[in-house]
Length: 173
Image 1 (cartoon, rainbow, N blue to C red):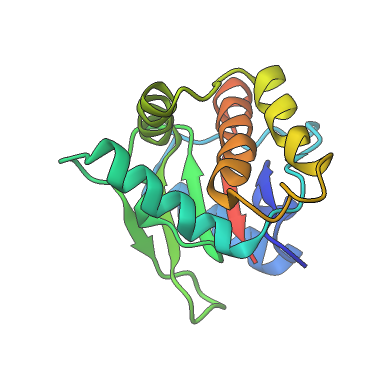
Image 2 (cartoon, rainbow, N blue to C red):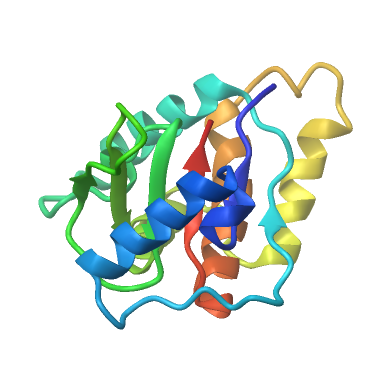
Protein backbone atom coordinates (compact mmCIF):
# COMPACT_ATOMS: atom_id res chain seq x y z
CA UNK A 1 0.00 0.00 0.00
CA UNK A 2 1.22 3.50 -0.84
CA UNK A 3 1.00 6.75 1.04
CA UNK A 4 -2.47 8.10 1.82
CA UNK A 5 -3.30 11.47 3.35
CA UNK A 6 -6.39 11.77 5.53
CA UNK A 7 -8.25 14.82 6.82
CA UNK A 8 -10.37 13.86 9.77
CA UNK A 9 -10.40 12.63 13.33
CA UNK A 10 -7.85 10.38 15.03
CA UNK A 11 -10.32 7.49 14.79
CA UNK A 12 -10.24 7.84 11.00
CA UNK A 13 -6.58 6.76 10.94
CA UNK A 14 -5.90 4.77 14.14
CA UNK A 15 -7.48 1.88 16.03
CA UNK A 16 -10.08 3.04 18.55
CA UNK A 17 -7.93 2.66 21.69
CA UNK A 18 -4.92 4.43 20.19
CA UNK A 19 -7.17 7.06 18.56
CA UNK A 20 -8.54 7.99 21.99
CA UNK A 21 -5.00 8.24 23.37
CA UNK A 22 -3.95 10.49 20.47
CA UNK A 23 -7.03 12.72 20.82
CA UNK A 24 -6.47 13.04 24.58
CA UNK A 25 -2.78 13.77 24.12
CA UNK A 26 -3.46 16.46 21.51
CA UNK A 27 -6.11 18.03 23.72
CA UNK A 28 -3.66 18.13 26.64
CA UNK A 29 -0.98 19.84 24.51
CA UNK A 30 -3.34 22.21 22.69
CA UNK A 31 -6.24 22.70 25.15
CA UNK A 32 -9.40 24.07 23.58
CA UNK A 33 -7.73 24.66 20.22
CA UNK A 34 -8.82 21.52 18.36
CA UNK A 35 -12.21 20.21 17.32
CA UNK A 36 -13.06 16.73 16.12
CA UNK A 37 -16.54 17.05 14.54
CA UNK A 38 -18.26 13.67 14.96
CA UNK A 39 -20.43 13.56 11.84
CA UNK A 40 -18.00 14.58 9.10
CA UNK A 41 -16.76 11.85 6.76
CA UNK A 42 -12.95 11.91 6.37
CA UNK A 43 -11.32 13.22 3.20
CA UNK A 44 -8.73 10.86 1.77
CA UNK A 45 -6.17 11.40 -0.96
CA UNK A 46 -5.50 9.09 -3.84
CA UNK A 47 -2.81 6.49 -3.14
CA UNK A 48 0.63 8.05 -3.59
CA UNK A 49 4.18 6.71 -3.95
CA UNK A 50 6.04 6.68 -0.61
CA UNK A 51 9.16 8.17 -2.14
CA UNK A 52 7.16 11.17 -3.35
CA UNK A 53 6.92 12.56 0.20
CA UNK A 54 10.69 12.86 0.60
CA UNK A 55 11.03 14.11 -2.98
CA UNK A 56 8.49 16.85 -2.28
CA UNK A 57 10.18 17.80 1.00
CA UNK A 58 13.51 18.13 -0.81
CA UNK A 59 12.04 20.07 -3.73
CA UNK A 60 10.17 22.51 -1.47
CA UNK A 61 13.24 23.04 0.74
CA UNK A 62 15.44 23.81 -2.27
CA UNK A 63 12.82 26.03 -3.89
CA UNK A 64 11.72 28.23 -0.99
CA UNK A 65 14.82 28.12 1.26
CA UNK A 66 12.68 29.06 4.26
CA UNK A 67 14.66 30.51 7.19
CA UNK A 68 11.79 29.74 9.61
CA UNK A 69 10.75 26.33 11.01
CA UNK A 70 10.07 24.12 8.01
CA UNK A 71 6.70 22.50 8.67
CA UNK A 72 6.67 20.16 5.66
CA UNK A 73 10.18 18.97 6.52
CA UNK A 74 9.30 18.31 10.15
CA UNK A 75 6.82 15.52 9.40
CA UNK A 76 7.84 12.17 7.98
CA UNK A 77 5.43 10.03 6.00
CA UNK A 78 4.55 7.51 8.71
CA UNK A 79 3.57 9.22 11.96
CA UNK A 80 2.61 12.82 11.57
CA UNK A 81 -0.21 15.29 11.74
CA UNK A 82 -0.68 18.86 10.58
CA UNK A 83 -3.08 20.72 12.87
CA UNK A 84 -5.33 23.50 11.52
CA UNK A 85 -3.89 25.92 14.08
CA UNK A 86 -0.62 27.78 14.48
CA UNK A 87 1.89 25.58 16.32
CA UNK A 88 5.63 25.09 16.24
CA UNK A 89 6.82 21.73 14.89
CA UNK A 90 7.06 19.22 17.73
CA UNK A 91 7.20 15.52 18.54
CA UNK A 92 4.73 14.10 21.04
CA UNK A 93 5.16 10.77 22.78
CA UNK A 94 1.79 9.02 22.89
CA UNK A 95 1.25 6.02 25.16
CA UNK A 96 0.89 2.87 23.12
CA UNK A 97 3.43 3.78 20.43
CA UNK A 98 7.20 3.68 20.25
CA UNK A 99 7.15 6.23 17.43
CA UNK A 100 6.54 9.86 18.43
CA UNK A 101 3.73 11.70 16.69
CA UNK A 102 5.26 14.51 14.65
CA UNK A 103 3.11 17.63 14.80
CA UNK A 104 3.18 20.76 12.64
CA UNK A 105 0.80 23.50 11.49
CA UNK A 106 -1.44 23.22 8.45
CA UNK A 107 -1.57 27.03 8.36
CA UNK A 108 2.20 27.28 8.01
CA UNK A 109 2.30 24.30 5.66
CA UNK A 110 -0.11 26.14 3.36
CA UNK A 111 2.19 29.19 3.35
CA UNK A 112 5.14 26.99 2.39
CA UNK A 113 3.22 25.18 -0.34
CA UNK A 114 1.76 28.41 -1.76
CA UNK A 115 5.24 29.91 -2.01
CA UNK A 116 6.46 26.72 -3.66
CA UNK A 117 3.50 26.77 -6.07
CA UNK A 118 4.12 30.41 -6.92
CA UNK A 119 7.77 29.76 -7.76
CA UNK A 120 7.06 26.52 -9.65
CA UNK A 121 3.89 27.87 -11.31
CA UNK A 122 1.71 25.14 -9.87
CA UNK A 123 -2.02 25.45 -9.08
CA UNK A 124 -3.35 25.83 -5.55
CA UNK A 125 -7.12 25.35 -6.06
CA UNK A 126 -8.66 21.89 -5.60
CA UNK A 127 -10.15 21.51 -9.09
CA UNK A 128 -6.88 22.45 -10.82
CA UNK A 129 -4.89 20.29 -8.40
CA UNK A 130 -7.03 17.23 -9.13
CA UNK A 131 -6.77 17.88 -12.87
CA UNK A 132 -2.97 18.03 -12.52
CA UNK A 133 -2.92 14.74 -10.61
CA UNK A 134 -5.15 13.07 -13.19
CA UNK A 135 -2.73 14.06 -15.96
CA UNK A 136 -0.25 11.70 -14.32
CA UNK A 137 -2.79 8.92 -13.80
CA UNK A 138 -3.96 9.07 -17.41
CA UNK A 139 -0.48 8.78 -18.93
CA UNK A 140 1.27 5.41 -18.53
CA UNK A 141 4.69 6.98 -19.18
CA UNK A 142 4.15 9.99 -16.93
CA UNK A 143 2.70 8.15 -13.91
CA UNK A 144 6.17 7.00 -12.84
CA UNK A 145 7.70 10.49 -12.96
CA UNK A 146 7.55 13.69 -10.93
CA UNK A 147 6.46 12.04 -7.70
CA UNK A 148 7.01 15.37 -5.95
CA UNK A 149 4.38 17.04 -8.16
CA UNK A 150 1.95 14.15 -7.71
CA UNK A 151 2.27 14.30 -3.92
CA UNK A 152 2.09 18.11 -3.99
CA UNK A 153 -1.22 18.00 -5.90
CA UNK A 154 -2.81 15.71 -3.31
CA UNK A 155 -1.17 17.34 -0.28
CA UNK A 156 -2.35 20.81 -1.29
CA UNK A 157 -5.90 19.47 -1.64
CA UNK A 158 -5.56 17.90 1.81
CA UNK A 159 -4.32 21.23 3.22
CA UNK A 160 -7.26 23.08 1.67
CA UNK A 161 -9.67 20.52 3.13
CA UNK A 162 -7.98 20.57 6.54
CA UNK A 163 -8.31 24.34 6.82
CA UNK A 164 -11.86 24.57 5.45
CA UNK A 165 -13.07 21.72 7.72
CA UNK A 166 -10.87 22.76 10.67
CA UNK A 167 -9.69 19.15 10.98
CA UNK A 168 -6.20 17.64 11.28
CA UNK A 169 -4.35 16.37 8.21
CA UNK A 170 -2.85 12.95 9.00
CA UNK A 171 0.24 11.47 7.36
CA UNK A 172 0.39 8.04 8.97
CA UNK A 173 1.23 4.50 7.92
